[in-house]
Length: 277
Image (cartoon, rainbow, N blue to C red; front, side):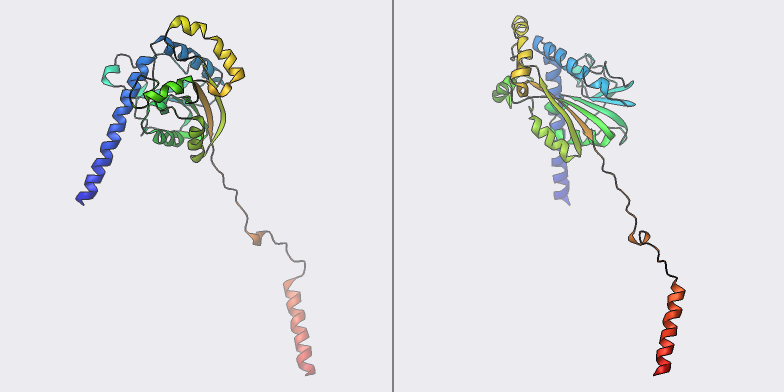
């Protein structure tokens, strides 16, 4: 019994460590968004979301994690919008959340949200599979998940290599490939409707250089569309429906011959045969 208790405590300790690491990563990413490069990326992300969110309808929209004070959801036609995240103590003065909530265990009823937006939530979370499972749980059938992630197949991904374990955000984040996220979504029963990469500028912090490199966004979209620094995935939650099949005995055609008539005729034939014998 004591071994079971020790294993349980060890498992809970690992979950707590992952949770604390996720909080630190969120804090670092929130600070990075205040830099010139972060502001340029934020502008590009808002532009891409403006082309997606107005076409998604429903009653409730949930955004998991908030990394800046800008409103990602301003162009959405869904009126009831919730931003859920957990702020560390150092972020309390900057956080403007509707609800403080752990993405690993959302206090939201199942099948109740129409759209879930995850802006780099999987990049900075130490248990991204659990976040996707919770997203699947709270989404209604045919609901949408909108995911923003950093792309490892980009110039940003190259800078990510020496910063995998320790380094500056966002280059020390998870950098999952689009195919891996697509595999996870497929296992949960989602249908990936679209994958788009964007923001082809190099990871430099100088505002003047960033402005000069803005032409790469136009050139990159035409020449190397898969190598943008960020990708946007829109996935639809599929729910398999059962088609009732009628039993075979209901499908049999009724006989045109009266059963009683056949029985009488059979008895009559048997009687004649017995009489002749």
